[in-house]
Length: 256
Image 1 (spheres, one colour):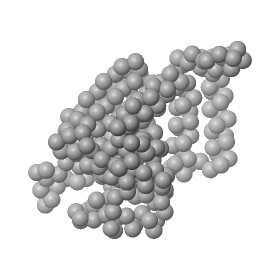
Image 2: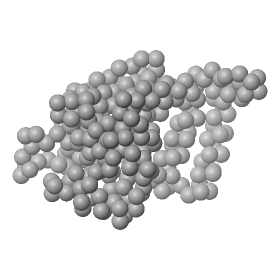
Image 3: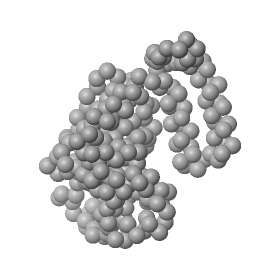
Image 4: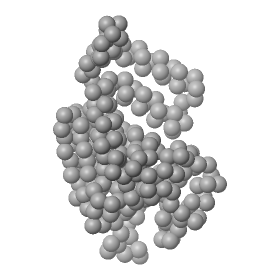
């Protein structure tokens, strides 16, 4: 079950199937995609993704799946990848709060999110060694780009999972926090972003995306920054930010 709440310009999407550790079947992925589409249509200025219960998301729901006839391409290519692209391209800052298991497609959801806070004792990595399957949903890219090929393959071959604290220390995610502080801290970060200069944040989000996929080098990123500043000059928030700084007051950004 996927729950969507929109309050004060912030969308909160909750994976709400704690009895199965929020594992995602095809219908869940469709519902999650629809929730992001609804949040985008509502024009929210920040979005929070979280999981109910003791896990964020244990990955794919394989209950009842026959491996002999499994349409794995339909699941990954047809459902998971389009969803991850929608999350990565969401037109507002996105945040995730992750506790417990963050595995498989659950890990992919975090990779596609802008800012990820994890519980100190979260479990992150590749459990696929015991399944005869390969790590998916962008997991190879995350582990290799942050930890290097040797540590990535060590984790994949062994099936050892990183704690949330280890994952943050390795540069995989943003912050590791006590589990009981996770939602409060993420909500505060989302609220701060929702009251900020949305268009400037999106400009940075686009530049970071291009740096991540390798389409920008140093001087390309400088050129992209220059172009972003020139475009932002015509926004209400740019003018408000300058005036507020000159007048020594807190800016009142509208997101435009």
